[in-house]
Image (tube, rainbow, N blue to C red):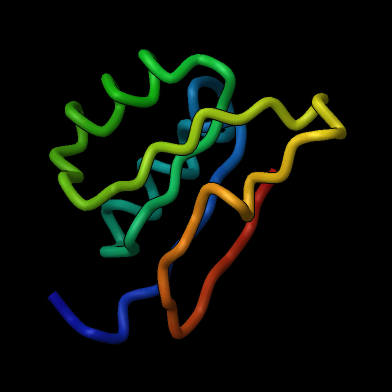
Length: 83
């Protein structure tokens, strides 16, 4: 694994386009941060992909009082957010 891997934070990763993006990014070699309301689905996706280093951050984007950034304390060289 390259030290220059991108870290990609994908919200809505439990279904649809978000899940497809997660799969594509994993196959490209990116490090994943997976967010959605349904953490059990995110755990299953991580297991399906074999992405042991994927970070699961259960988060509801409709909850305006919450902050996902408080859940992540990882240094990265580059990151992509998709929603």
